Length: 206
Image 1: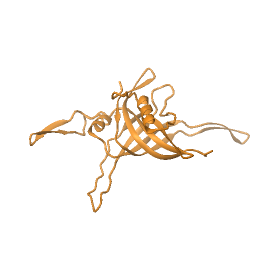
Image 2: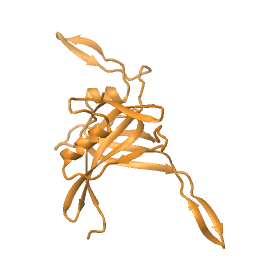
Image 3: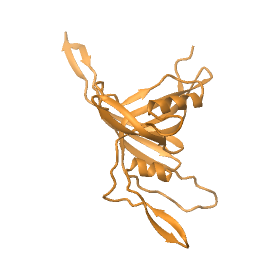
Image 4: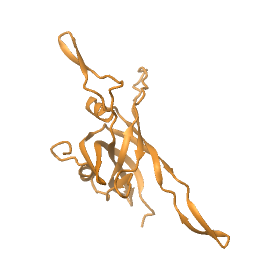
């Protein structure tokens, strides 16, 4: 019997608009974010609350999750996903050589929404590969910077790094992450992930 699962991959990041009413969380408008390269979670927790008796720690109440951040590295956001996660206004247009060109503006009209972020983590155990659908239940992205370099003798593959603030959701349990049971195929795991984010087979969530 194996000692545990080993992470071997990350894929299929999705995003969906977060809403909460009466302690019930829903998602809508879900879409693929980009092609996933990596993800890293940095968590913040309160201090443990220890009770001492007979000169030892007799009881302890563990610190709870208070916040954190998620750093997602992707190949590059498409226009629709960029406008969605950063709450951008409708693009303006200019005409160049008879062709309409859209222009996105980063400014005061941006209204960055709360979103749920989902992705797949691939594992291997005893030579068997599985995929775990995960959802960060309530996040908000920070406007990203930009890093680009000219091509030299060979292509230097350049990625985009996105940072999102992690929060507890507005359910009674104040969840901040949900993980579904491992699936044997990536396609099955992606279907579960879409369901967790309210995304129907016909498109975005209702």
